[in-house]
Image (cartoon, rainbow, N blue to C red):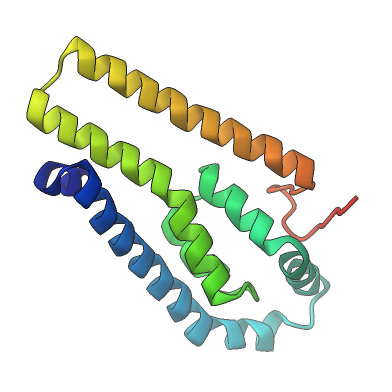
Length: 162
């Protein structure tokens, strides 16, 4: 993202960074799906906890994915592998991951381009502050949406559709 902004500018850098991040997360997801899901089902598939998580992912996995991508609870790399172990569909994971990482990628790319071309100035500090505020608002909106949809990241296996 940062290098993309410096080398290619904010628009092209964002596109390149988004494609690279999406491909990387998708490959991690597929690696976990192909190597780990069957093994996980074999050894833990019969447990009540695993069944509850599977039911929760089947019922509100997309909502949970949106929340965990927009609200940085866990590193993306860990999420990529963890979601590969669940039953969430590949294309749902890939598209939602791309869409929800786009705002952050754009802001990082834009700010790195601005810093490289203009240096640190009061204008840059103002733009950086606005970008930080925009990300904060996005995170708060995601949290509000999750409360509305009854998605609880501290209990991913519980699904409360009311």
